Image 1 (tube, rainbow, N blue to C red):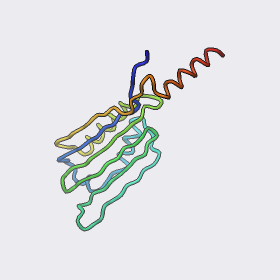
Image 2: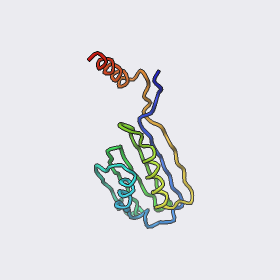
Image 3: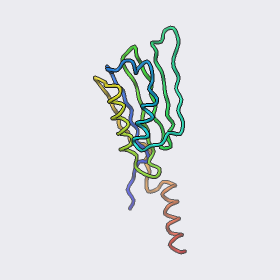
Image 4: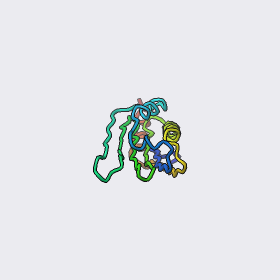
Length: 145
């Protein structure tokens, strides 16, 4: 009998008291992109938005679309905090360790005094799921070839 498994891994990251306050006001996309690539993942696209209202302290949001899913973040310089999100799919392989490598890089980059990291398994795949049933049917059909 096939065991259930998850087809995604989601890191929800909150960093507080970041030592590198300048990075909360100005994103270093090239460094983050390098970390993504060095982890073994592939960047499909990138975008960011810098908030420039009178009451804003220089915050920004960024989003890397990956072939494996995404890495995103939003900075809060006024609170010395950044919220980050690393999500990977396990389409053709388990990408958990790649996500963990990106997390380690982000932690070294922002140097938080306090952190809250939630690790969430996503997308439960059961024996009765349509994709596993389809795979079983293909396996049976291939047997008779």
